[in-house]
Length: 296
Image (cartoon, rainbow, N blue to C red; front, top):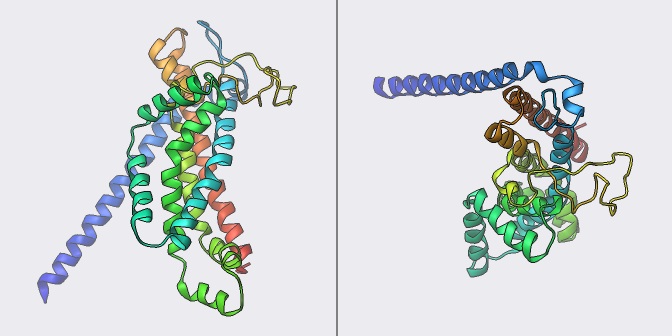
């Protein structure tokens, strides 16, 4: 009787230590990045364009490109990924087809991002003649994010209680009404988690974008909102260097005298944006879940 209790106490202490180490590591890492980039956390750095081989450049275009790439990629990948999750959980019957799709998804998720970048270079940049562009980068990131989005969506939908679904059918609802009005609202927290995971990767990805979105940004006219005008920031076929790519480039080239300061500031801004996006998405997901399930 004594040994199981001893083992239980040892396991409890072990897991508390693991949690403490993990949290401490995250706090130290985040604190270090923010501390190193503290001098650049100002409006001028965030809104101005970088300077070539000069001090004092900002990250305005790169930050805008990162946000644009996030929006375009989510617009493409979220409906497809959630749709794939609904198909796998509600429509696909166990068998060769579903197993093939599942294995293909898992294989795709294990591909290195540099390989996906080269795939995007061959298909979107060269074959479709879209060049290094925003849309090429967004499609390459879609290839990277679809497996995660589909798998998280499938697991979230499968976790919804069968009693809820059967109650919906018993009230005469069709399958689609059950999915759209009952299952998806119940699975919303998991779906939000999937979107957050993929969004973090969009912000932080660099290798795949080197070969698709490019490492430059043309002069943009932010008063021009016409998406078919090449000078517009919303033109999808223009090069779109993101913040993560810019951090890599300025660290590797080091042409600016204050390259280290710019890189530290860029990393701090990137971290703050990812944290803010995660917190806002979780807050809004919880709010939406309560509204749709009648808890509020």
